[in-house]
Length: 224
Image (cartoon, rainbow, N blue to C red):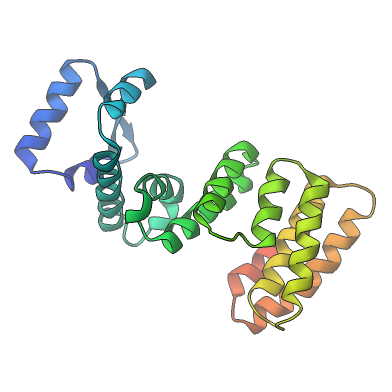
């Protein structure tokens, strides 16, 4: 955990006394990450043992405090820390805002996909689905595609596309097309690239009309 986030969790003297004691006991060790100092557990078993001693309510409250500290420290660049932030929001349970939790779990999944980390992306998307009372077909499609369940994913995307047609130019219309196209490009079976190109060419003007310029650029980038 980055030192600036840790500092938001306690008073300076007590905090540094605790960090120094833990470091001397070889429970944690510091690492440099650019200009930041990050503290890590020396072994995963140490983390599991210490966390396991906390009651669930206390553990959730701690995760909520960490997420609040991250909001304070990374206010202008919270999206750069989507994976860590969404993890703490999810672990905070019902005390965390569900919409924020889902938003950042989805963002973390998208960021993982950009580096072809499909297992990590699947984990983020499935956690997001677990927060939802009634997942949308597109969200189910993304999760299935991350798990390489192509037929299941395509079924969900076709359903999502049909439902999106009922309300023209809602955000879901171009977003479903973009994700459906992504799935087709990943599967890369005969005819998939042509269908993906068609979907992206439909999505781009929709994004532009909605003022979603960044999304339009992402879609153009997928065209190659």
